[in-house]
Image 1: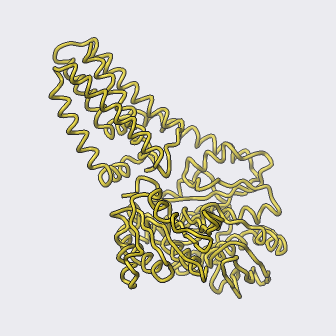
Image 2: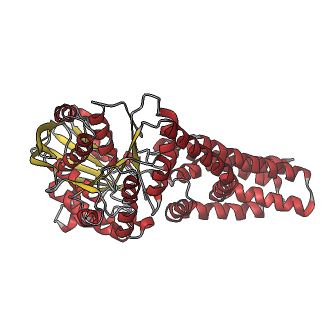
Image 3: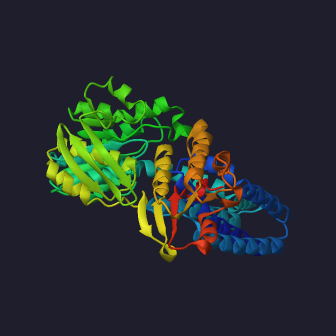
Length: 519
């Protein structure tokens, strides 16, 4: 009896620890390969400790009271750790239907094993006892086993939801679908385009960073109404074929490619593959006879467009561009040139790259019939996209530039330039750097550190190991190491920053990475 109770406590402890594992599995988009990458980098100590505990528990198997006490202590420790990790987590586990099914599968496995143990005897009972200990202690294995068990169910749900989304769009025969993709700038451009088109049309947009197939499907099934005239669909990609997968669901009529650059190179492997994937949107749009605008100022795009005769350019010297640009801490003013028509505009959006996002959106809006005056008014009413160079009043009257959702090399350098425009103020950057850049990751983070050193008074780096290239980049510019602070978390960064803050301080929060990347 004591042994059974001990094994039940071990199973409950495993379910408590599973919360953290599912959080990381979710943050890695439920891809086991990416989850394994996190586990390999960030979970080595925990795995080693759990394997040791497993061996210890195995040694104590025949000592039921000892196992019961050990399982109870382990459960208490795991509960304390779970609460602590949950409080410190930047991106907490979202309890979706999929998470519930994964937890349900894990509970079922433990219930069957414990019930089997209670009913069995001899060699079978020993094997079941070993399995309970294995799944109860080595919880990454439990998470992966639950994923494997639920995969057929998830595939069935996915196929049904995709069919339903296609049906909804097919029944709205008059709806215009616009795809927006790019290595960076796509979310901001999407929301700017929505605001411009709102002047003339009933528009639905994928919210936040909903740019995966299931995020797009969820928006279609939840937000498309009979009166919807335009659906703006942000399209993200981490490997070749991802844009085509979304295009096969929504069949876009028009599109925008905001940029192409070295992002997600861990999965793309080369910038050429990034180009090929982003231009899958061009292939889909041309099948519908629509318009696709691509950024002439993003390296390599103009050359690519030269091979795509039906694509149009914005920016640079194209028909749709910005002239007489003035940027400052209060926003930007410039002349929008759209197919020969000049429109003077002002916006509260910060940074030169925000101007380019406006040009992208205005180009397509004008092509769809929005007037110059409607565009001018909409641009003047634009508000910063949440967590993208969003300026806020902050602690003790200081200024916060919230750029937490910016995760691309060019955008981060532009954000530092915005920070530098706050002359006469004490300037601080808090950042963990950039990720998923493959062999270019060190170089890009080194450059970001060097750029920060040119404008900042204080540099706070998050992540003991990840921040090394940033640290070295800052030192390469002769930055005083006494003003570089390396911390383990954003909470710890606040402990460093807040005691010295005053109304004369401005801080740039750059790229707030989720927990699975902080190390």
